[in-house]
Image 1 (cartoon, rainbow, N blue to C red):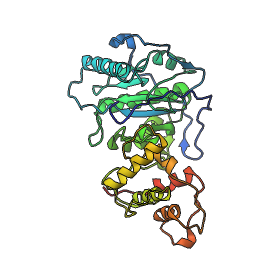
Image 2: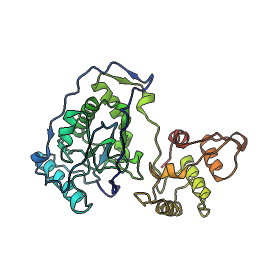
Image 3: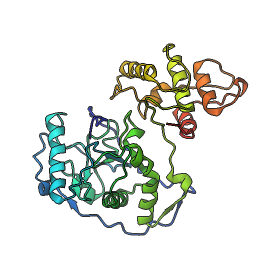
Image 4: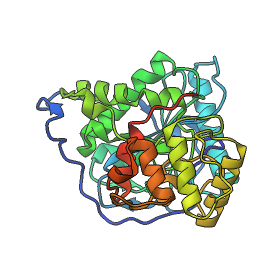
Length: 341
């Protein structure tokens, strides 16, 4: 993964329940068999030995996290290029990040080759009962399978062969662990990062739908499109930006102009906020890590900057401010906003 961030700290998280059925949004018994795509194991691509014991947890993961490597969109689609990619990622993670092995569980090359990332990930997937602790997203490394997709998908679409392997791998992982297709996320859902790129992230509803189809299920559009924290960056405009500016002002950053324009001064204020809260990335972007830290409860009739943030989203007068008691309420409103770029 590139500069938009892999995890830097290890969290040991206790047992969590396997995701259940989403009521009214999943149709079909899910009896179809999702055959495993061919996966090249660590020995097959020439991996180094891990530098420490790979932690294995006696619990199933409950979600899948999609990443992109933020590397060039190469035209060499050969097996040799895939092997070199896997070795390069491992060398970077071990020699520069200081990790014991590759951070993600699996990697997919632009040529559609699926490779094991961290040692023992393939072995444990075949068992379908346990989880290798990864290092692809802090706080998610025990509960989520991390998949890196070679390339940068900020403006470009992934090659068809990569997409097909991603769908097949996700379907097999869901089948092995009992994960619902709705539980496929992007890295930015949990961190302040552009990963897995605007285009690939925007394709996640399609991915959930196609994975469900492989498993003999059908997702409603309502369920396939999940509520999520919007990623805000310099040059973004709209009600989500205005809400963020009011929320920054509510924590004392009164120099931020609440005008709905995510300018450089707003980004600078976000960096100060991130530094104060010791977020993983101090980059001036508001994503899945900063939003939950920034929002707070607002009750009807309340005044102040947080209430102004709420009104920027619900577009009502001060007497009818919606009650926002927690992060889920804010996420629901923010997810409904459309940014003009």
